[in-house]
Image 1 (cartoon, rainbow, N blue to C red):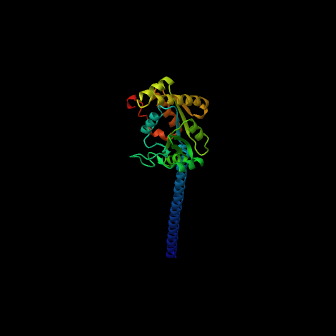
Image 2 (cartoon, rainbow, N blue to C red):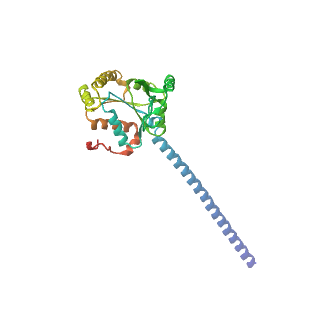
Image 3 (cartoon, one colour):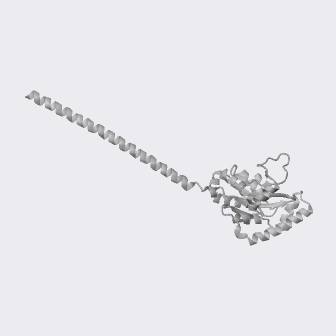
Length: 269
């Protein structure tokens, strides 16, 4: 009898141990499953957080690479300011390539210096409203197409354009292009004339024509002041560029990565 009881006790103990071990194994398995679920959920949450972070910091493409338009009289310093931007923010800005019907010169590359086209084709595209601005100079057409500007934006660069008042008005009223507009003013007409003469490449007739055009553009700028995001009086190049740069960094936050301007030291200009 004692032997039977002993065997029963052993079996009971063994069964208890087996139940305990099974329960322990199940508990471990359940814990592992819970941990796996928690880790999966954590990863999912982390992925959502990252996505939300990217979405909140990634600017809308349309506005992250919106065109920057410069307007102002010849000799006021638009080209200099544009070249400073290209140097200060390498790979971030790009001049839009214009169209022309004139003959290609030695060394010029189609699509790099100009988009060379025929008079008939350009007139057709102008009639279809495919150009932001255009002009006929000495029998040759020149112009900036909507496609050329969008091509720059699509390459994740900010298009830079130099337009006259009419071109600015055309871009301003385009629904599919949201641009920033800057008008660059001379300190005075007298200073502008000095700058034009200091080039040494202008005839007297050319200087007078440019001054007449400048007077017209300055008058129009006052009439259409509301079109421009900022009016820059270029009496000091460093200060003018600093104001331009500050305004652009505010509108294009990804430019902040370039830190301090290379042109804070006037010797760099």
